[in-house]
Structures are given as structure tokens and as C-alpha cells.
Image 1 (tube, rainbow, N blue to C red):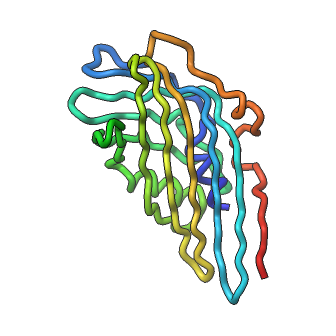
Image 2: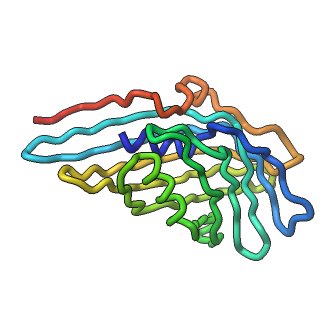
Length: 201
């Protein structure tokens, strides 16, 4: 399932150091525990199948928002273990835009991320949408975020997969990463997780 592969790419496997750079013209945020959900669907010959998967990732990683309107989210994993072997994960980099009081993170290196998904899946995976929305608290010390990913796996039976990641973060050196009670009830994200699938005839 491509959803499981996408979750593996988004979640940590081989940890990297989570250190904020100094000096820094901007802010650095420590990412807290996140919940991820994936839905894959496909249809052919009057039949359709829909698979779902939910899991959590441990607190890991940082998000750097620079004063020049750019951002970096270093990959919390140097690599993930896929059916094809170890696949390197690129750092996410892009532009920050403000809209209706929220920050929109628009990655500029989607080609690198798509190549990692291709290598992990062992086939072509087209990234149709990948965007993160941030809402910074009034005190400026914490934020909540939502990342939405949509990919298409072409083939005899095209499969569309949507992944939603919800996370929290705290400004570095101000507090410990938040932990969600709901997240702790979910299994840890892994390439080995089995999705729940329903077929319609």
C-alpha cells in the first residue's frame, strides 16, 4: 500500500540529530508527537477498494522558519527501510506564505521527495499535492500544524492515496514537545503496518 510507504517516509526510522542552528535569523521549533492517517482507493470493472491506516510518530525533528520567508524541516530520518532496501530521505525546504493569519509551507524540492517515494515503492508515484499549514499560538511559544499529501500511483488500476499528518511544536528552549493522549493510543508508524481494506462489488 502506497499509504504505508508514504507514512514510512514521513516518520522517523534512522534518527538524525535534532539541533537548531546557531546563529539563526528566525525561529526554531521542536516537533512533538504526531498522528498520521492514510486513505488509498482504486476502482476497476465496477469494483472498488478503499484502505485506511492510522498511526503515530514519536517526538522527533525540528522546523526552522527564517526571517527571509524560507523554511527548512530536516528529515527526522536519514533513511527508511523499504521493500527495495534503505532509501535516503531529503530535507524539506521551501517558501513560507501567510494567508488569513496562518502560515503555509510550500516545498520547493518536491521532485526529491517524489524520487524517494518512487525508490521506496519500486514504481512511479506522482505527488499531486504536498502542503503544510501552521497556526502559531497567540503567545508565540507553540504551534499546531497539518500536512496534507496526495499521491497517484498510475497503472492498470490507478490508486489515489491521501495522507494527513497532524502535529504540534514548541519554540526551541521554551518547553518540552507536547504529547497527545489520542496519539498514544495509536500504533507507531511502520512500513509493516497492515491497512484495513473494504471492497465494494
